[in-house]
Length: 180
Image 1 (cartoon, helix red, strand yellow):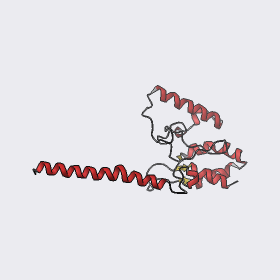
Image 2 (cartoon, one colour; image 1 turned 180 degrees about the vertical axis):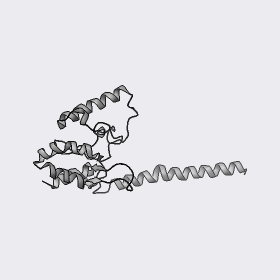
Image 3 (tube, rainbow, N blue to C red; image 1 turned 135 degrees about the vertical axis):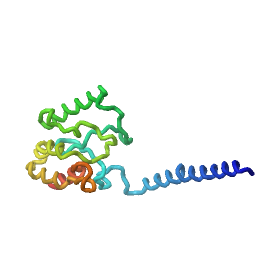
Image 4 (cartoon, rainbow, N blue to C red; image 1 turned 120 degrees about the vertical axis):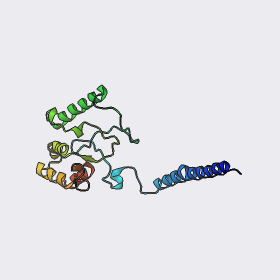
């Protein structure tokens, strides 16, 4: 057998083994684990605060808009020079300003720009503070109590230096639910 034939045969064996592992065994294992009792896709049911959970109604803090069509995760490739994107951002800015009873220039950027995956539970402190009066009214709480909850649910900078502090909306809504 020639060297070329030996190498081709070895390559074919590696291809078949890796295809079996990554194409059959791993997906089958993931599928099997996902079918275990007690595991649910809903972040509220599993107790995680790593995923944004949107609740309906004025009594809850809203996460960033999502560019994903759930259950898929993925964003858009539209930039700020795209007219469709600019129109969507303008519509969102108007809607948030009306919902919160403020002028459009007070609406923070993360309130109108979408999260690509729709899974990030974090918003800026500015967006959280904008929502305080509405949420406090809906829960008959003082704004100071709601602001204290925001402080409790604010995550610091990554590694102490990366990014900006951000408010975890899922944790904040759970804290709000407990504060009643």
